[in-house]
Image 1: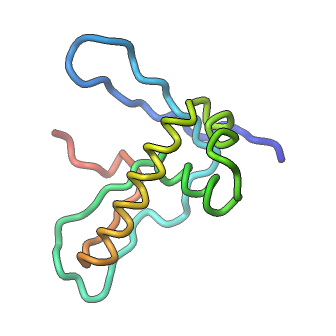
Image 2: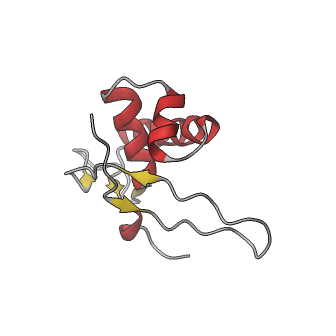
Image 3: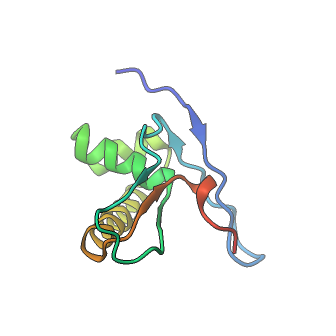
Length: 111
């Protein structure tokens, strides 16, 4: 399987000090940009980062180990673990709280 780079995310560091975060390589963008539950219990959206969606695809759909997924994305296994835990938590919250799930950082509100 050939892995091609489609999107490079632009993560920003918090605060003004420290090293810049490693930009994970995104191999395939999800086709769905938003999942809306019926009925909607809470209109506040939950935002799933593209890196979180990619790690879900690699680990849960492709069946790769976290270390293999990290190599393909250009990040450490620990980063893959953190992204996977965050993505699963957001999906579970969307399901059980009845909140829309928006995929992609470009749609997230600026703070």
